[in-house]
Image (cartoon, rainbow, N blue to C red; front, side, top):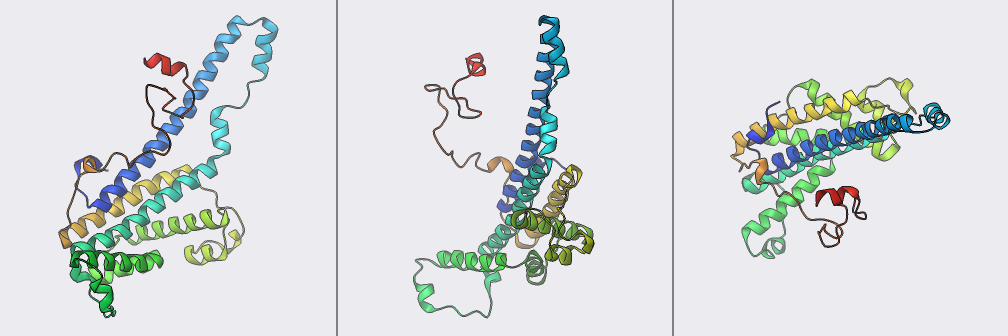
Length: 279
């Protein structure tokens, strides 16, 4: 996979890629934290065994406790569902946002047989304002349908296609997994079976996710959007930007970190030892 920083994107493409990379970065960060906790814990136990009385050291040896990795493993299904849902939501948002981008950049694509009241047009101070509202309305209508309907709209109206059938089926299955995760606690229902072609014997079972599946989905979604971006930019001449031009933050919730009250910037809690080390 090429370095995302070296490419130009539509604004929806840049936002998708930025969020995709951020999700992957958070995944790596959390796993590093889990392993670091175990490393620190094991190091501390090693030191304590050398300094504690023999009976206490033996008791420490006999009661190793549950490691952070084991706790993480016990909650793996929930974590993988969260990661998958975030990936799929980011993916779906890209297509809705790109549709709006095409409508506003090329207003002629808004043409249809739909009737528009004159009063709805005259309430806008400029034609650009009317175009934006019409684009929003059409984008919302298209987004309410299924993803397959949205793909057909892109293909039939704009000549933009998703790519290989295998990639399409992978994304459609991921979307259906997202649906049962959000709406049915990842328990397989009849709708999921009918849309994915899975074994009917799986009805009522929990769909267990594997890390390799979610990791592979990361690259599949990136490849699909990367190809779609090239098509859309070439066909409609959409404005492109780099990842570096995206806003770094949209603000914070709650009080900002400041040296005056010096709360921990990691968790917002009271000052700790590592805060003092930074000064």
